[in-house]
Image (cartoon, rainbow, N blue to C red; front, side, top):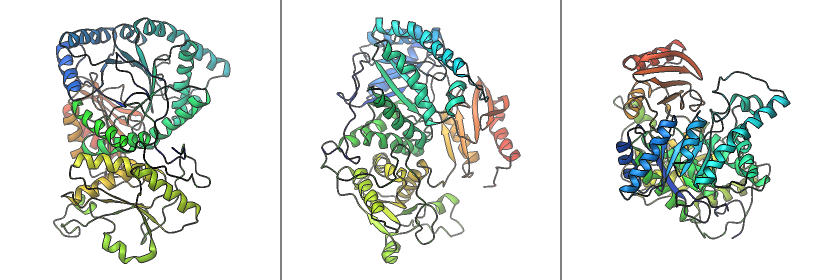
Length: 556
């Protein structure tokens, strides 16, 4: 197939064996999820692993806060094998190299975070390092990794280097800031040690709750590996994607964009829901992207001055005065201006109906795909129009015969997400006449634009998917925080189960609700902890009070 940038083909990688289920470009894209049980509860954890495996996951990850939990994963693994379940288990490690050493002898894969494996806990201080001091810190990484690598080699254990936006070390932050470039360097420092030791069973992940950051970090990571002749597989995920439709759309946009570029060898759709519910969403995404395999070649290249690693955001060409990308669709039956219409109903009216759009005559261009590789076809047309000097607004229209909501979320997110993120489109049109509720269709379109950070129409909730570290009922808490703050469409609010996913990994949230201890919550403004150890019963009222005290509250 022609190797123009709009064609789909899997990136070539080395194969990595994970408990007898290998991953990489010679294998199908693998799907995984993570338990939210207490890892020390062996029977309950094994039961949840069974449910995740029965849902179709290729791997299951469990948290290991310490050596005891790492040993617990080994016991879960033994119990599962006795029960006839051979799903590979992955230990998730933060801040505790001793736990990683223990897990390496007992699990099929160990995830370590370069941001906290060697470097001390983040202080978010402006630190400076001389070149000599920086090199000394790099030597510490090598010294810490060598015994870990040796145990992994002896036991056939794979490794995931999992970098998260917002959990970079103070040392990396001092040179690169909290940026995709910093994420890449954080991973490369560790990866160079593995390569020097000849240990190749390594998988890389670059995650963020910000879809743009996640995509840019992965693209830059691939470029950095290619520059040093490396071809390690990639794990993809939008961390803290959230709950319900928002989580599905953000994941479809972020993961789907990269899978469509041939990047990604294992994925997790992180939802603030029961972990087995993540699996079918991920399977749909993998299945849908695979339909593009061997598609007719798409000719052409990028328009002049375009940076594919971090696409420039061309100012939206206004259509009838609209200053943000528009949504085309059928109007809802509820009159948005009527007294009984709610704010959310009013929000779900399209900017233009098809009839209205046709009345505008030659004031815009509507492009449609002519290839099973829908985003590739649309992107090729967008770049061609940009090179031709077009000055009219461009609407990307995709037709779906879908009647299932989750399938429509996945397909539209994976198709129109890359188009929105290209920075070259001025509106999207999900043409789904067979779907019974047009308000759902409009909501999906708006969610795609929000995931691409092009148009904000509702509060953005950044919530972790829960794990064994979570200190409260995450699903119920997310719902209650949403009920209290869902009208604050100008804010991003993080709901994190523990300090690991706290001030760092909610990265660019305006406010944070973070588990501090059983029955206790800490509240954050950006990355600053404002109130510590608040009783859970008071926490949401105190969150509202904090938002009001900072002048960010608006009455519903």
